[in-house]
Length: 404
Ligand SMILES: *Cc1c(COP(=O)(O)O)cnc(C)c1O
Image (cartoon, rainbow, N blue to C red; front, side, top):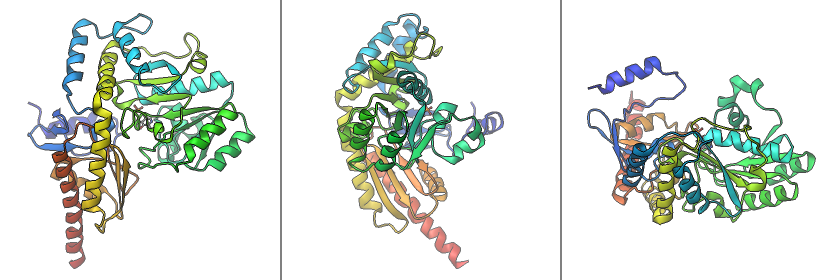
């Protein structure tokens, strides 16, 4: 059997070095837990970057995948597929009012690429407005509307021109740009994920919605991370009572099987003609079969659970760590949670992993969590205990260093 060490050695040698690796080997998983090859157990509050929304190896998803594998697992979208039709019917039950035409792909970035094409083709305009600290993916189109210099700087000259970035929440700036130029679309995450779980001012989304409508500009909500019940509503933008023109979905939609969805108002989506966008494996029956179950489970009480468990987790985080001197702020909504530290997270993250908790992070000092909605209270309690222990260990180690 391949051991932890050999696994790491082979990946480190042969895999392109584009990922910040963490020292965890995931050999098996169930629910909130992951085990490595030695049987060491971790609580997975990263959940494959927010993909395992219903927990790892969810029974209903596993069953659907197995059944689909036995029937047929690949057909090009030029051929009709019952699994794809069932997924689309289920999807249309939950999309915002009027968004009833979808393009299916394999990832979030691809969903964004399609949204960009729909916006440009249907409005016959080229300018795009996007948000500072926003994240939309790393293909060249998606990267063009992603703000971070860290991701862009080596490719700046190849990115699409005509993208203006505004501060998330700066309505006046959005309005000025809309007035000045013919803008095809405003892209934003209703709640910024990679940027550190940033919630908008209450008036921002409604104001931008109103302005985009009056200037003939499309409003595109990137719900790839915040959607599918993550915030306690099916779509995060519902928290502000608005409806976008286009929406992108990804991460958990395929239940762990790669999938991206661009869904929008028919009048815009149908502007794309035959051949203007396609993907060999997008909309494959396997992803669709898993996706159908994901949406069914969400409609079957899982969103409420995300809301309740999110509240519980934030409350426990506050109780245990709010007054901790390394913590400057805890924040979040539903199962989208962050803890901002007064110090760099790296040593604390490493201690947490050592103690059996895997999380995400943002910037240099924010610990971020996207737990599965199926997490139990006991698991939350245990994870927060680990978090607290890691914070305390940091202070102890610092004390020792100070004495040296
Ligand atoms: C993860 C993410 C993406 C990119 O999705 P990929 O599947 O990694 O291409 C785009 N937008 C948001 C908001 C995301 O969180």
